[in-house]
Image 1 (cartoon, protein in one colour):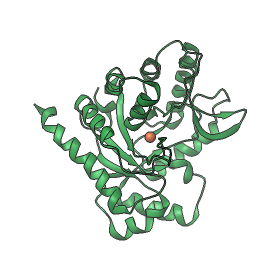
Image 2: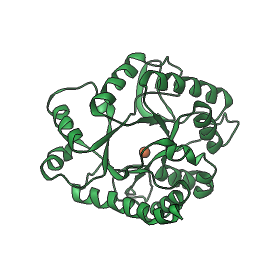
Image 3: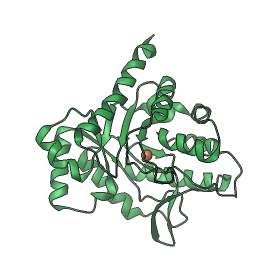
Image 4: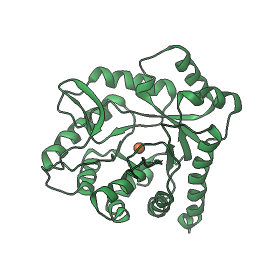
Length: 281
Ligand SMILES: [Fe+2]
């Protein structure tokens, strides 16, 4: 298996409401776009209508934030049913969400909270991913998150935790390279060693994002700036191992013009083209 048996779409970008009109009017040459499905699936009106038009022009891939795969609340079957219908409507070739918990006692905390790296959590998440895959009838990828703390109750490393889950559940991995870079700084490990220890054949998509440090110089995963040179380097080393895949530049705050977003997506695409000949040899 390579690229989790999914199509390698090259460099793409996160699609946000603010760019809809310009993208429809000017049709910039993005290979593909990703949307946060939770922002659209339960709403009609103008934005949904514009999204339909964009789906006729580009491959649009769904990415969710509200599945709560690691929560102990029961899986929301109605959410899965709505997600399935939405993915079919936009023709999404796969969908994804985060390896975390977001709900406690039926309340969505609107944040991606880290899970304890334990065997019990692995079993719990694997069981739920199997249900998700059955219900969605679509390839499902799980994304590694940025985490600012380590839950003290742990029996394995984060890399082992991620690996065991995606292998046992037989799902894909959405590898967020920026998240690995930031976590390696926060928690003091080698980012490339971490990536190398993951089941890379299961990587079906990559995320890249940037940040702007605050006045004190502190950094969080803010998705509000260009991709950092250190992340581009880590990305290059990663795709040398994975081969061509689908790479998405996420930019959610302090949105740049479409042309800037396109430049970042094309940079990712060029780097992937560079490694392609090495792939073939
Ligand atoms: Fe991400």
